[in-house]
Structure formats: C-alpha cells, structure tokens
Length: 406
Figure 1 (tube, rainbow, N blue to C red):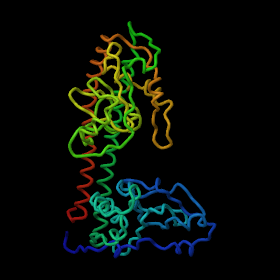
Figure 2: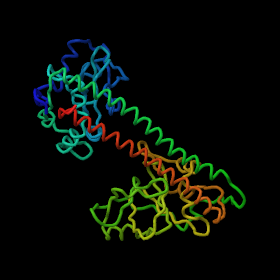
Figure 3: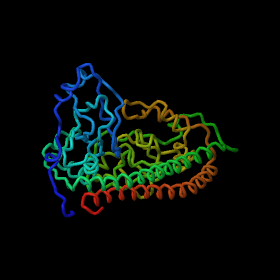
C-alpha cells in the first residue's frame, strides 16, 4: 500500500443503513419514490436505474430505504455471490426503497462512492463474505459484523478519483471486448445448430416416414432415480443435467458416488456404450449425449436413459436427430414448470421424430456433422478462453487498484 494511504473499517467511512425517518421528513406519504426490487439491481453495472415508482406510504414499512448516491449491496445468497451491487442514481425525489435484503452504504467525507463501489465489487470481498455467511440453506446472509468491520484502503480523495478514472476507462474497454466475444460465441453456437438443421432438411432417397412414437423405436426409455445421491471425492461419475452438453458429456467437476449407490441406482437399467442420456430440465433445454465405452455412469435426477434399437438408429445419428431444432421444439412443446421447465416421460415416449434414413445414410450424416462440430468446438473454445482472460484482467486491475499499484 502506498505511503499516505490509510485503512479504515466500512463502518468508520460509511453510514450503514441510513434511517427511514429521513424520507418521512422530506416527503409526504403520497409523494412518489423510486422502487428497486432485487431483480433490478445489476451485476457489473455501476449505477442502476429505477424502473418502478410507488407512493411513500406503500414502501416505508418493510422495505429498505436509500437515497441518491448511496451504494446498495445484496446480502443474501446467491445474489451476494453473484455480485449484485450498484450506486443509486436518478431516483424520484432523490429517494428509493427496495428489497429488505439490501445493505445500504452512505459514503462519508473520506470515501468516494465509486471508490467504494469498485472495492465491494472485488471477488476477494465476496469470497470472504461467503465464508462468514450464516442462516439456513438457501437463505444465508453475509454477517453484519463482517460488513461493519471489513477494512477498506483510504487514499486521499484526489487519488481515489484518479484510480476510479483508470478503472472506468479500462472496464469500458473490457465490457466492449466481452460483448464482442459473447456475440461471436453465440454466433458459433448458432452456426452449428443451423448446419444441423440444414443436414436434416436435405432428405433424399430411402428416408422412411415412421410415424411411430419414440418408445417403439427404442429398446427402452427409463426415467432415472428421483433421489439425491451422497457425493464423494472418488468413485463413479454421477451425471446430472449440468453434465449433459449438446451431443457430449461435460465431465469437468462431475459429482461422484460409491459403488453401492451405482448398484442401487442402475437396478432399472445399466448405462452402456451407445445409450443416450436425455436431460428433462435445463440448462440447455432438452439435449442428448452418447455414453462412451468403458465408462460406468450413475445417472441422477431429471435424466432419462434411452437405448435405441440398433436396426433403426445409429446412436450418434439419433443424438443429432434429437438435437436438431424441429425435434427440440416438439420435445419442449408440452414442457411444464413455473420456474424451471421439465418434460414429462409420457411426452418423451410419445415423441414423433418423423422420417428416418437407412443406417448407411445415418452414418454418412454423422461424418458430415462431426466434421463441422470439430471446427465449431475450436471456435467456441477460443471465445470462451477470451472471456476468461477478460475476467482475469478485470480482477487483476481491481487488485492493483486497491493495493496501490495503479
């Protein structure tokens, strides 16, 4: 830390949770104020814009009060971990109310509000805060004592503003670069889906209109266990919906279970090479993957094991068939769920996949799709790496800023 810098606790340099009486002194009960629910507090967004207004009488009871220039921080999981944070700006009558899960900081004379915002946006702060959370699972909150006693570097105000200017300029450039990389990533993924659709649109000789439910074209379609497996560091991979990618398994960070759990959970059917796994829920809609050889797998909640009839389907072709947009639309047409969509087993078994080519044509189509997939995966990897580098650059700049290296 540079000479001339001090460190103070957040409670020493900020008023934390300003009193609601301020609003009642300034406004009448019928006056409008800004209203900011949790979903309107941004991530990586320095100032937030209020989208709603309410009369003071409706909000001055259970909601959290703040004013123009205050800094808001979400204190509850997962919003705290996600970095929901922002500076109040352009509030109606200069006053706002919002979620009871906000911590409100009003910077004093020693700290600039933007300096405080950037300090609270650091990943290191969130990691330390998570370690000090308390409460029931799903409702954990960062501890009040942790917030109040957390120490912040306090250089002279002109120095704070100089460093804030550097961060503003640097982060604007990073934001632009990330937007371009994310757009290129989306385009790469869309390109593969477009190619997949065009391959299946070119139906030539030999394609047979089956008009049979999927259940008649498969050896079995099995709904997997609905329980939660005990997790361990070593053992047999346990496949959940996040492990199901578009045509492949995503095994990085996969959960693992014991041999006993594997034996119990595979009593209906043992997954084997050539079988498909279907995700009944998100993250990526309903997608299928092919199980590789010599890999025992335990299939978890909301996954479906499908074994196609070998005289009807090449397994890789079948996976691509289920992934192509027309079939995905059919599969999701009857999905249910208020927050998370899921597909019922009867709709999976009743799915009509349309016409199917001979096995020789299926294998030719697989070769075409695979050749495009390899190049597509290369492009996706490049853009994902670029996004990771930009995130690391941002963290590095924040570290340099608050250790006196900028």
